Length: 478
Image (tube, rainbow, N blue to C red):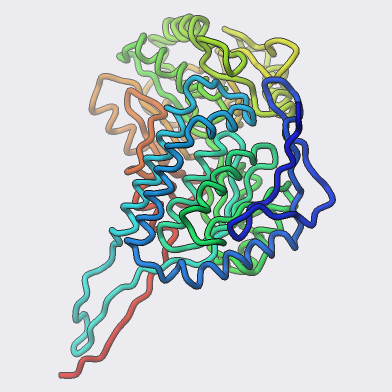
């Protein structure tokens, strides 16, 4: 098998890096090296920002309609290249091939088209005389050059969540994808180069040191990252030294609260699907289940039965699988480590082991009888592992749900509207689903509280995060 030598994409074309070190890109389903990529240096990052700065001089002055048209054309091109994008993403992530176009590429296309529309729907206070003899109005402007970092769990989609609102608002971008999953982002940059001027969308590959160079470079006025809490804290600390704006979408530990009156069969199906999809490698995954004591045993049995029959893992082209391999050997070790360290009171109701001896596959796993302070309840496992614990009443459910450092997403399963509304009000999470878990739409915001970060992806709020507000006041006399 030939191994591709990937390059950075800067100023509208692939360019050589000054780096002497390269990283192996591994197919998680086979453990084979499929490509190598440069560990971009500070000079590579600076060159990319120089290209982005040059492009901003003209892109920042384009009209909203011009940006909208370019984004519409980009969305159409993503749609035309859906199968190629899916093939590249599958080889780089080990995801099931069957659903990736419908589950990822089609939503990405829709999200680009949403932000194309947002470019022409800027919000601001009405112009008027808020002081006698003076007219005031608000300008909403692009921030400037943006540095962005994306994760390995959804490489394509997270890149779209970053670049689409930033470019729609008139900014230019230098994006560093995860060190292990850069291939699809580079392909999207190549596709985008037909519709955006050179330097509007640039990609540099590399490791954590490359990311640090991106954040510490003096050029960007804003840095946006989707990643771990550790990475977010480091980015915020570095950005603070230069007073850069930051946009942080970090980890999650979503509580999934099942009340006695819930539809048990529907809850088991919805939670298993939302917990094991993408091998649980999702900050919003339904992996921390709180079950009211009256239905606890019945629900855990139903969840295990549904998962046993439907939450299967395997190679990308296998039939009837829900999820594929974990992203890396390190991630497989991390997930198994949580299971190996379980306390004696924990009960493994399903799974618990690596699957096979080739590829980073792990069985769908359900762990019951956990308590609030257990490591597997408090910390993000980021694998195909669902934990379950009991609660007695609404107050205890809320206390357990909010009793973690994260605040990204949550769900409530009940047929009582009042209970659902009280929980939605009091849950300290950026998203609350009711009798469902994990659907997202371009029109609604995605983002969390506490250690899950701040700022919003998707929606008009996500667009506004990539703009700045200027007050203009003119003396008009009397």
